Image (cartoon, rainbow, N blue to C red; front, side):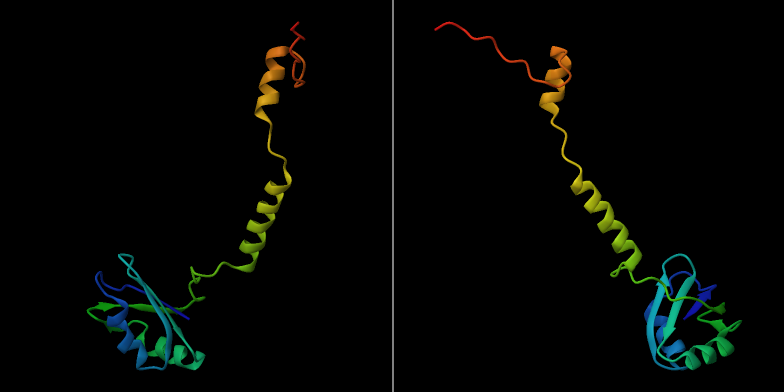
Length: 125
């Protein structure tokens, strides 16, 4: 994958697609709006190398851009396995904790019996 910086504001994915597509099949292209940064991922690493060699320092859509190798941006639709296992472990831990019985705790505090409920005295009928 490639990281492209120096892109002028207002440039969209569809503007960059034909330029980077000249070097091979673009798998994914993502422009970070108002950041002047884009990520371009090719299906073939040799295509990415060609684009890097020819476009680094070139004028692209009215601005000189820098192109460098980068890891592909994370896919927001998929969580990593570590994140999934951490969140499921936290969920399981919270499910193991019994819910607090607030009525017995507050009754115990009022009666001074450390949580035991006070039994009402028997009334004659």
